[in-house]
Length: 129
Image (cartoon, rainbow, N blue to C red; front, side):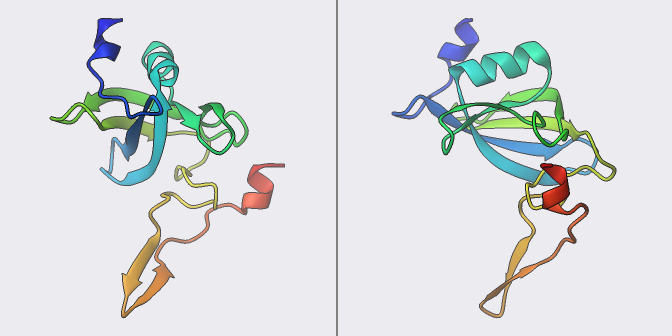
């Protein structure tokens, strides 16, 4: 797996990852991967991240059912950021955010105040029942 050696992992062995929706180009979420997560993502064709808060691998959708089918794995020019082109599965339209929204980037700064710009598509309490 020499391709994994080309990634510039940080001092904790992690690389930042952006998940972008294939059809719309929407940036759905940001997360982290360690070497094992990136290898599993490439092998399975579904996104697997490293949860810093839980200290373990996190197969996106394992609890929510909102899996991410990976179409392409790209790396930036500095080899220190990964971009996944994905289809968000499990709900139509796709829900990537634990708040029940399509994208984690639903807050917009306007006039010095953060406001939600996307609706909740599914109650988060019902996602994780």
